[in-house]
Image 1 (tube, rainbow, N blue to C red):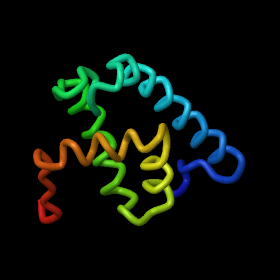
Image 2: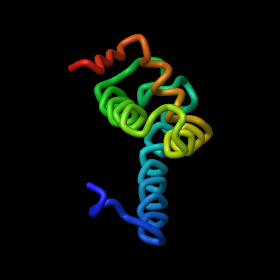
Image 3: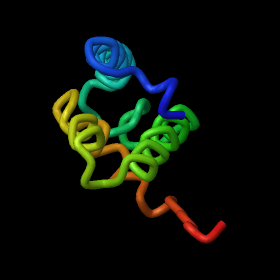
Image 4: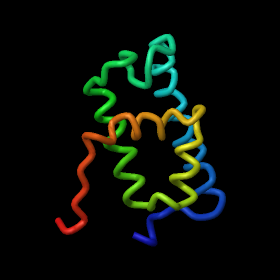
Length: 97
């Protein structure tokens, strides 16, 4: 794994590309007119579950205190942390599996 992880300028460019990609997803969320944290406003949809699943996976892989997770949590006015928090009651993580 260490051999395939981008380093230096390549890592910075990949991180910026990831942030920009989430910015495009943020535009979808913005279309709900501020009616809630989800794509459909106050009602979670399958799309929200997919987005939150990826975000939760990243949080688990990197750790909640990692710089990567702190970055993601702050992007798009905290949208990603808010979605994860809004769906927290559905989250189940068993590290022993």
